[in-house]
Picture 1 (cartoon, rainbow, N blue to C red):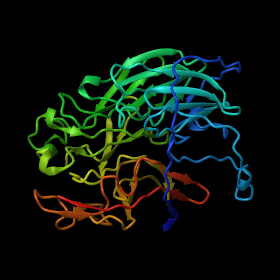
Picture 2 (cartoon, helix red, strand yellow):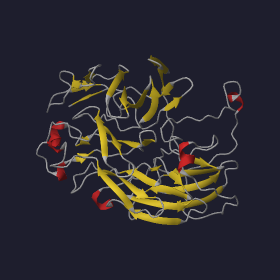
Picture 3 (spheres, rainbow, N blue to C red):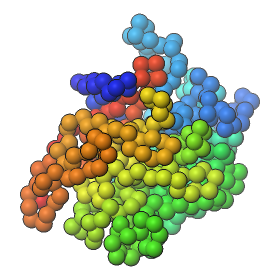
Picture 4 (cartoon, rainbow, N blue to C red):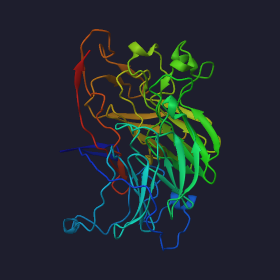
Length: 426
């Protein structure tokens, strides 16, 4: 089943799809690579070789587009299985990296494998030992990794960033970023911007003495370069949007999907989840709760917040817009496109955060968006009240979720997996 809408000059093609992968355990070096290794540079990340996939969406603009054209509609039916690789057991949602014929694959529970992409032979594997059993739902997964220089970078589930030698899998450095005992964890990988490893922290559904953040680290040493909170603190700009809540009761705004980077604006774009608890009734405030459910434009050298755009202020159904920010020059404008769980495709001016447009697929029943200003209002009866049954679309899984979109520059089409749902309850 598919739906296709034309949006100005930008096409939106929306297939419904799912992918499931399973795996086996591994934790030691197996074979050294006998090929010469050329370090990955910032220039290579900006313009990868056509045969390489160097970022979780291949390029830092999050297009997810490959210019390879050998496989086409005329010959795709002739594809045959060459080799298969069984992954580690657990929740698997990874995007592999491919560089110079080697596939680097993130597995559940902090395991990285380097595989010869031609033969399927294992070159090396790294496994991280943690105390206690793994979390089968959240902490076990690692959606992506990063490559830069001669290193592979893993955001581990215990809130460490680990740098591995891309040739052997040996640990180059291991940097503690958050306290696992406080609930901090990583579930997605970093991106590399101008030699800094930039990563978004998760695990902020629990109240704690600090909040979630985005941080940058020196690629050679792991030393922290900057840290930017994703929640407005008391006394800071936007802090009053949480009412009088003290910092330890300002939860959420996790950044669990990797960001994007635009060298034209020299800004890196990171998105945040909804405030926690999800429902306003239990959150302690009905305010906007900045900077939850927002996209943040940060200076990659300092972490300074240049602008933000909040999609649904005070969101109260666990329907956030945390997913990838796709950077497309559209109609003479440097735009940022994003679709969250509501199934609304937002277009934002990525130079200044100004609202451009909102294209609603028509599946959600909760909000209205002013087409001129982008102002969001909840429809009557759609904000939950204690003891009152409510039926709405979508449910907490959203019209879309973490499976990423892809943009085709020749057709100007953005392809987004969707799965419309509804729910009722109190």
